[in-house]
Length: 469
View (cartoon, one colour):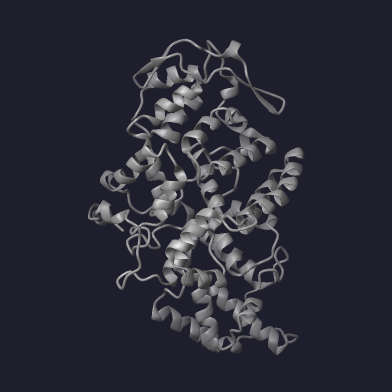
C-alpha cells in the first residue's frame, strides 16, 4: 500500500461496516487476518469456527471476550502478588505472556500491549515489579474503556511518577518531563504546543509523592496558582491539564492515527481526510476507545486487500502465533527470555517513545533469531520446550497423514492457505523427498515420519508471508 493508494481511499467507504460479498467474501484469510490483528493468532478449530460464525459474531466475541474471564483473573492474581513481593521482573514478563496466551479475552491483552507501548515505561528505571504490575493493571482495566480516564489516572501512576520524575516535581521547582511527554507522546503530538505550555502545565503536576508503596498527594508541594496552558487560564491541577489537552483539535486525530498503525496498516501514513470521520467519532464519544476499536475492526478498510499483510509481526505476535496455532502447553519463562533477542522485552521498552515497530523488527540477526526460535519450538529437541509444542502430535490430532494433507494443513493453520501455487509445490516436493534424508540409526519409522512433519511445519514458519501480520 502506497501513499498514492491511501489518497484514493474514500473515507465514507473505508469506515462503513464490512459486509461479505462476491468481491469480498468472508473466507479463511479474512478470519486469520482478524485473529492476527485483534488477538495473537488462532488454533485450527478457532479458525474453522470463525469461518462459520461470520464477521459480526466473531468481532463481537473478540470485543466481549469469552466465558471464564473472572475465574482466569482470580487464578492469575495470587502469582502476580508473589512476583510483586519478590520484585521478580523476569517472571512478571512470563506471567504477562501467559495471560496473552490463555486469557479468554485476548483483544483486551492486545490493546493493553498497545497502551504499554504508548505510555512506554521501563523497569530499567522504575526498578519495582509491584509498580510495573500496577501500571499493567491500570492499562488493562481501561484498555477498551475511555482514554480520558486512563490518561487522568496515568498522571499519578507510581511507575510513571518514577519513570518521568514526577515524584520529584515540587512547588517552585516543577519537573517538566511528564508535561512534555503528556503533550508530545500521550495526547497531542509534536507541533501542537509550545515550550511555555509545557512549563505552565508542569506546575499542575507538582505535589505527588511516593511514600513506601503508596502514592500520596502533598498539597503543600502543589502549585495551585494560575496557569495558562494551551490558551486556557485557571488554577489548573493534573485533571484540568488532561481535560485541556483532550479538548485540542489535534488530540483525537493523533490517537486515532496511532491505533490505525497498530490495527490497520503501518506501511502508509493515512491522510487527514481518511482519519477525520474516526476522529470525530472518538471525540464525540468522550474518547471511548472500545468503540473506536470496534469501528476499525468492523470496517471495509480493515478487511480489504489494501491493508492485508501490511504490518510486520512484532516479536510477541510472532512467538504467540506459533504457540497458539500449535496448541502448545509450554511454560512462558523461556518464551519471555527469547523475546529480548527478538527485540521486544516486555516491561522494558527502549525509550519514552516505545518500540518503533515496522521494519525495525526485522534485520539479518533478528530474522535468524526468529527462525531459530521457530525451530526450537517445533523440533521437540530443545530442552526449553521439549515436546510440549509438537506439530506432529497436532497433525495426528486432526488426522492429517498424507503429504498433500500435511502441506495444506500447515498452510491453512499458519497462513490460511493464502500462498502462491509455487510455494505450495515447493513444500510438497520437500515433503515427498524428506524421507530420503539421513536419520539416526536408532530412529523408528514413526520418528522419521514425525521429523518430516516437524521440518515441514518449520519451513512454513520461515516463509516471508509468516513474518507479516
